[in-house]
Image: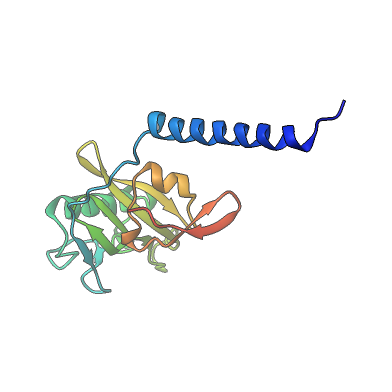
Length: 179
């Protein structure tokens, strides 16, 4: 059975019109609005000197950071020294944290490492850390030595403004632009 072009064209146009109208109606009636991100924090950039923290922790360590973050850094350095380096006196100055950027609304990016010391056998190594305030306290939410999965960054609502400009989407590295 064949149909004439006179019947096929109007039927196809009618189907297309119905699909367009239905699609437009569905898009406007059921789609949730995109969430708006209102960030109230100020971005702080740290240089090598004012972003550095080491034990014994002093007022010279990350002086521009909020007090809550400074307490967190001090506790992380102490934890690393005691738990990962055995609390050996010769290892006390090995743990280091370097802060690159910090958002005053609860996000920070930097490095966690232990300086190799001959007197401290397990020292050496490190990774990039992303910290965020969760349930009222600073926590390390990501620690890595490579590009992070985009969905993981978005799950923690990590702003690209920290200096994170790429992420993995599947097997491809793509630009990261999360507000």
